[in-house]
Image 1 (tube, rainbow, N blue to C red):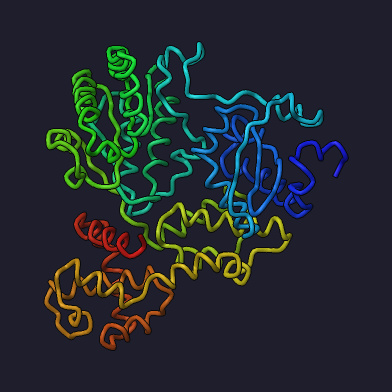
Image 2: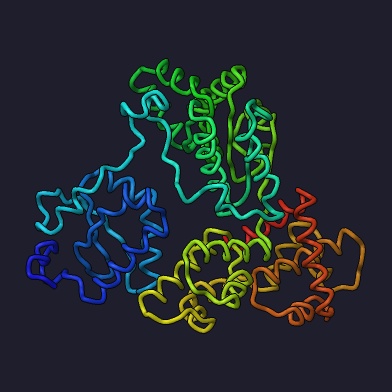
Length: 471
């Protein structure tokens, strides 16, 4: 370490070890590939290691705004990447260090281009006059979205509203569980819309931010400006609409905004974790409006889709990862796509730091906490009990020879979930279901995968039971 580098750290007791310095350099370099060039250059390049103490990695940025934005949008993933390489890192602390307080050699980092913030500026004043829209993540495009049976309808609908010169259906309502690709599709729509129709004003934000903007306008007694801002856009995209549940005044304003935009033939895109009819805490008239257009659900992923996503991610990373490792991850990490990609990033970061190739053995070692958590938390007995409760059948029916549809279908659902959520082999699963053959389990898994695409009710049942088990 150079002598003047010590000035970056609080004191010698907090000075990072060479191991931590290497870890941070590796992770910081990996952020470009993880989040994309634009995000890295605008937000993450200025991150500078300051100290390490008691499992806390302290990094700095030059402004409070950057700190708050990184904390909200990127810090959780950065910490996950760090912990994936060194389990001793348990916390990421982001502090503000003015450029004048930095050593001379850090001046170049401090002078990095200012981030493109979602605030009013002359450059985007015509497009987003009130600074309403959040920035789009350049990683989330149609090109990087892997299409499979569980998300085919949602993807096709998203592409259609971008390609169509008119509004084909209003709104487009996307729903599904956590980490299944809703936000990816929303960002893909927004970026493709800007590319194809540059004169259209596109605003994308979370329902939480919509509520915040509305409350701020109420306090400032400037609701007319708020109304004009939202009702003058060409495409309004609201993520996680369920967060305005129970907020009567916000729902009232959103209801009127929705109607005004529909009357003007402007496109609306909404996402949520449930179908409109299942959203509790929303007024009936609003739920009815949300179901007006096309409601497209994104089902839990299948093995083939997970494998395809991993193969695409491998290509993006340019990493050498054996097919056997991807197949192992696709089989074991079934909760959601976000966790699946996070697992892949962990093993790639580990290989980069240790300079060792990725193998099945190293993957099992690096991900032992994740794999152990899945195996420890969920058993076939638990799955059978949850499925029996959901379908209101007797637990012994899971082991019986009864073939009535109202018993056989839940039994197949339980077999499917046992295959997805545990590490048990097909013969082991069969034995837990009254000594059935492994081919019976294989048939059940394939049948449920097919029905989840064809039957929205089955897909919803499986999603609800899965979440009750993994939550």
